[in-house]
Image (cartoon, rainbow, N blue to C red; front, side, top):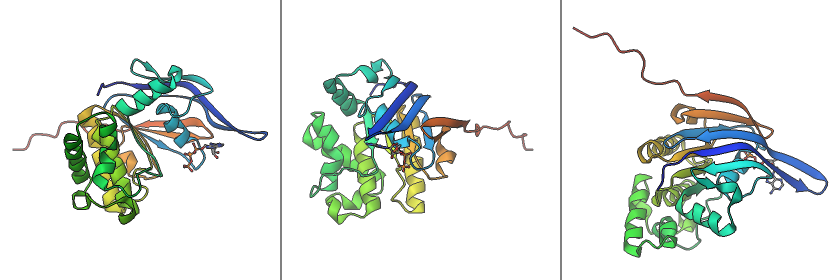
Length: 241
Ligand SMILES: Nc1ncnc2c1ncn2[C@@H]1O[C@H](COP(=O)(O)OP(=O)(O)OP(=O)(O)O)[C@@H](O)[C@H]1O
């Protein structure tokens, strides 16, 4: 992986349905540095998922630029975008997109196999990630045999298994109970910090503000507020005698 900064400048994405134009993303400028976790809040329809799709190169903006390190995501050919998504991006969407009928370990190994990692090594890495998200006991279950929260964790393991330098997650705790949700948030924050990945997380989970380095709030396709987490290192405590 290559540590790099995500940078959107005046990104615009409008959808047209009939005569109506929906200004889903309407001039967003933002960054996420390597090792930084940025949370995206905002009401339903404020453009959060569209912003993730733009950053992933899965949608092209109507205007503005999107860069990831030296890559100009805006100007990529389809083949370059596919390479970017395979090598750099880990994406956990709301619908998980797991392969039906395929065991969790193979589902989590999919990107590694696509990247020509030998099968045994791919399975080993996938197993490690499944264990880290608490699914060590479900390696051979297919998506149909897993709960919604378990499927979500397989999708997270798959996104992390090939060491992405940009991790994009849409409601990563949406299907998880409160304890597991807190664990997954802590894991994502730790990964960002440990592996130097830039993490962009769409969430409604108020606990995300505790782990994120920055919180951006969107409304009607625009960033309306930005808060930076207070540093936890306060003034030095007085020495005890
Ligand atoms: N493919 C599409 N065609 C037309 N309009 C779309 C399309 N995708 C999204 N929209 C519209 O664009 C706006 C932003 O949608 P988006 O999914 O980015 O919002 P969101 O903040 O992620 O919402 P939620 O929290 O409900 O997932 C919404 O008004 C939505 O209806």
